[in-house]
Length: 204
Image 1 (cartoon, rainbow, N blue to C red):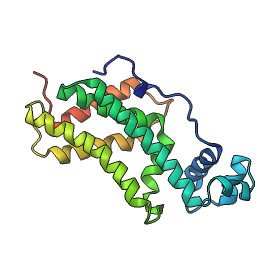
Image 2: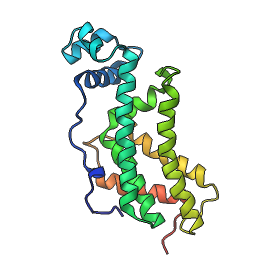
Image 3: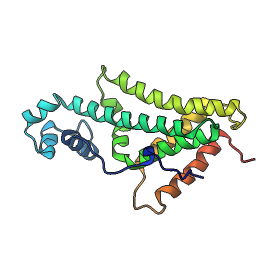
Image 4: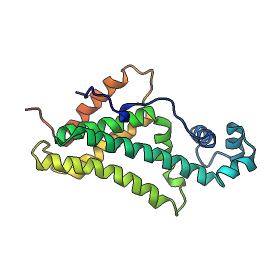
């Protein structure tokens, strides 16, 4: 079911983050945002606290910097996947779903922090971050709406189905393991079946 062509949106190597953000990600995963101290992040990054503050003036700026890089990467990959898929609604749907799944599998820790620490964002940045998430959701919404209009999907609630699909993909970050029973491609194929069922696709 997955397309076998190669595109950079499918390519995931090691995560390359600036040392302070890499340290913050590790600490947030272990202790949560509120349970993490700036001193701990500085120590993990091999910096003094003043040295860390030279790059990131607060723990909040570390969280925001991490989430900005995460969302920029996610949105770029999704947009590229959709563009490469062409005009066919089903192909576009499969592409955006696969892109979301791959991101939440192979950038699992970043995605997990993005989902769980929304409550920790300050009031100034929160609307920006929510805007990124809304942009991602609209990509899925528009594809499902177009698919319904073209008679490819028969869901009676296009936006609701699109939200359910996106939520399923995001949820992968909470349970996916590289050493799990199924390979990444097998999991993607299985979840594409679920996603197609949610939007009411029936092979003809």
